[in-house]
Image (cartoon, rainbow, N blue to C red; front, side, top):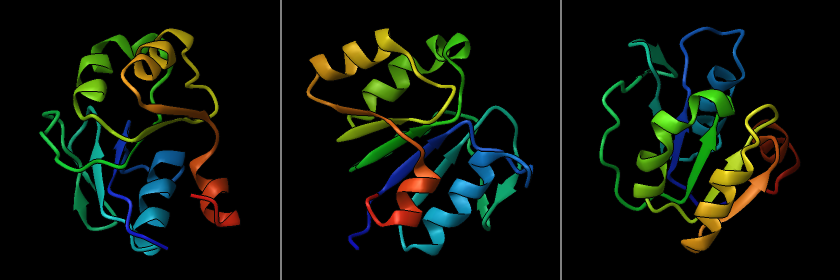
Length: 121
């Protein structure tokens, strides 16, 4: 499986959160992961960025932020110029999907954890 540099938006150091599990699983599958969230912390040995860092060569942005909180992230997400954005359950946002697609970014309403487990990440 090729390394797909992935930015996890909504990353958390709380083990009960799906974003925590996603960062760990992505890393264990050999993907380069950049966790970005609103609180500092660590997950899978990586610091959670709270400063919306510039990241080059992004393959995937996987969202763990609900649509009501996405406006604050929208310019950052689109500015990363990812190949695709995964809208995990509860993060679906038709407006953001439309804007991404208009920029040639593939969008998917899917679950990162399921995609990894079945081998179609």
